[in-house]
Image (cartoon, rainbow, N blue to C red):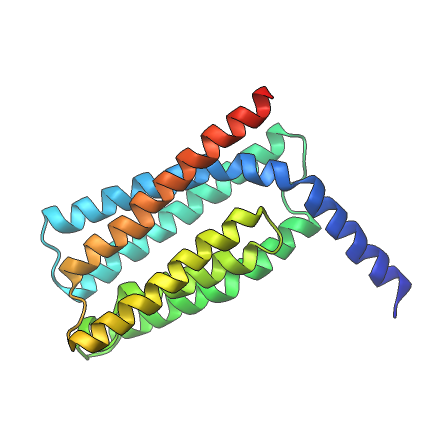
Length: 207
């Protein structure tokens, strides 16, 4: 085994452990941000009756792109505030864990949006997003705070259960019901988790 590689891995693990508190501190506002935009997107979809599957896909893909962009700038500002380099070996490991599932989900949904099929029923978009997003969070949880893994498992298990229910009921998920699903998981759950992180971090800081 290469001793330099082993030393580099140990150093990365040490940095991840040292920065777990920083990651946790940054997660609270990021989750709150994602939750707020998720609720807003769901409200827009329901209020304007965006029943067309392509409009549904465009709404939520644009929302995801906006949240990811804002998360990037917020995480960068947080790193600068704490005097930490933004792009470091721990950050690279987290990005490596997040990107494959996220890009796979976006690729599948983007491709299906271009196909001339009734994918709102045959290919339930919201379930696919829940599943891949949950996999991304669960993978990143190996390099971050433990709660992220459990948060990701909620999305994975929920996606599987929704698919089973959909199959047994022999019905699909329309864009209308999809907005409710997306609003709950990507809006309400993120908001609740952000609030939990905010108050638990505040207590630990006071202690």
